[in-house]
Length: 109
Image 1 (cartoon, one colour):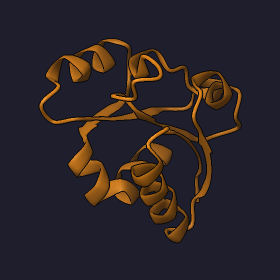
Image 2 (cartoon, helix red, strand yellow):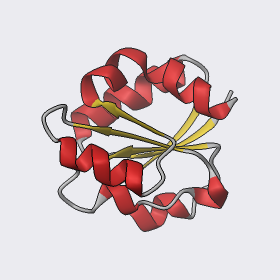
Image 3 (cartoon, rainbow, N blue to C red):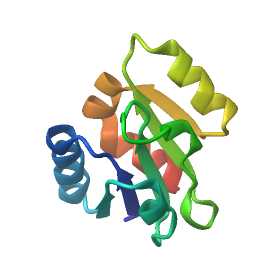
């Protein structure tokens, strides 16, 4: 399975993602700061694009790993910025909650 760097300072949602990805067999390292996640060894970077602590669309992936960003479905401007920043996949938060494993698997393949 994949090594996932999870950049999500939201304690509840981050824990949900971390637990779900671990249950699917992924190795997950969770970070609150973009600079820490950028330095991690990971196959996929998962980013909370609406985190108030940082501009999620600017998060750099470790060693060129693909980036998966999630955002509030009402914040289309954030989605657009992430796509322009080169995120390989950008999905609403609700889809991330439902399909986290499939989305990470798709990028890790």
